[in-house]
Length: 158
Picture (cartoon, rainbow, N blue to C red):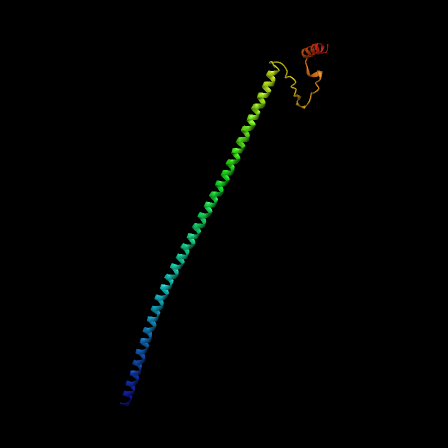
């Protein structure tokens, strides 16, 4: 009977140990499950943070791109305005040159009218006395003009 009671005692100890191990295993399973849940929550939180950071970075990049676009547009507008200013100045200068050319042409025409230039005549010697009196060579005149000049000198000088 003694072995029986020893066997019973050992069996009870074995049962106790098995129960204890079972509890320990359950605790470890619960701990593992809790760790899985925590890890999943942490992963979700990190994902959300990364997404928020990504959205913030995207928002900043979009703002920066928008700012750069505005700057580029302003620069283009300034260059356009500068080009327009230069074009207008060039047009005004061209108009002034054209006006001066018209005035010069009118002066030439008036001078020719004053000298009664007839078609077929050679252009006359145009004298500008602002710088003093030029010396004119007899070679500047044709035969008809030379005869007229000689007659005029004879009359003037006697």
